[in-house]
Image 1: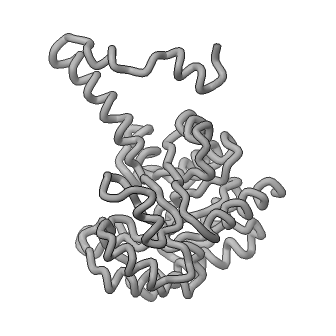
Image 2: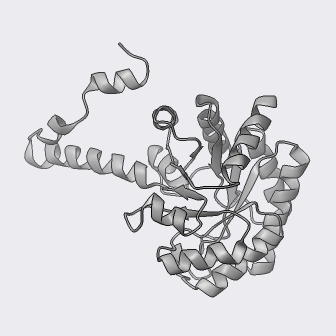
Length: 272
């Protein structure tokens, strides 16, 4: 528990000033490699993990997610934020119980989304969404872990790209106890700046899954945390799919010749 609290304190300190990148590994190997590059914190990715199991995003069970989160947190010395999807429950009380279990895995942060998974009605009612954040906050406080809570509003990635409504939700989540605010899918600097100003002094996470901005530009806009979601996993899958597709369709192996040498990968994990 002491190590967990130390990581939580270190993670909170990263949010106090400046801007840092928190890349998203999808398994223990990718987590260890990212940590070796000097990143100060990591975050799990629900999509990347689900794909590693041959499933679509949001297709894993609570127990599978908890085991994965614990494995990643145990594998590295830096703080880890858990992409805990929607908390694996709709009801705030059940969500609180699940968050308590996640807080016990050794993570330093937990993110909770407000998406329903229903394309016809993709976001929880605001009042319910706020109650869910408040319940997560209560569970974390009761755990005594000091885990940092991120409140996510998913409108821009579920077909409801309304900046005013998104900001209204993020402000409400901050008032309900979210330590950090996150609206994946916002990309224009004007929108990002508007979010940063609206929730200040709470820190804002921005998703950089394309090259729409640099770290320096986002830092200048007041962003404190930059994640990449499933983009690193997608990049890995891109290389794999190209190479496998070439073999299946052409019977050639050109893409394999472009791969990183095995010795370099072995070296990253302590091999000779």
